[in-house]
Image (cartoon, rainbow, N blue to C red; front, side):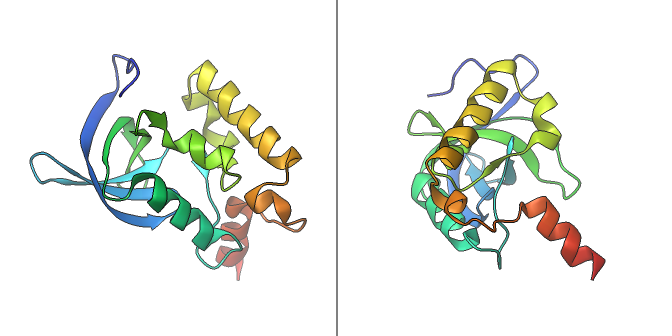
Amino acid sequence: MLLAAPSWAQVIAGTVVSIADGDTITVLDGQRVQHRIRLAGIDTPERGQPFGQRAKEHLSQLVFGKPVEVETEKKDRYGRQVGKVYADGRDVNLAMMVAGLAWHYKKYESEQTTSDRLLYSSAEVDAKAAKRGLWSDPHFIAPWEWRAKRRSH
């Protein structure tokens, strides 16, 4: 299932037991240890934002209760592993982009491989052009802008 992981990556294999939102899951590994995973390279609408619930539901359809493998190399400031998730032989992070339920998180694109950066960017352009998912809303606000506005109030 897993494509050749870079030598520096840690691989977490387990079953998805929880979906927090459109870009955060919990994986239970074979030793019954829970790992909170933030999907790398993407950002999805927050709870309370248009398409936030749809993004969570779509991610749930892709991974909930399924075996996954996660390539990860770092933790974010909340202690979540940041990684690329594979389920049913596909890149789940990219699948969220293709569905039009995630932005390519350009702030962190330098952490992606060149091929992933191109794939994710292209998926965003295609979803925008097709007005798929969140791109159907002409007044969408990127989640990082939405979070910044909420913090400033």
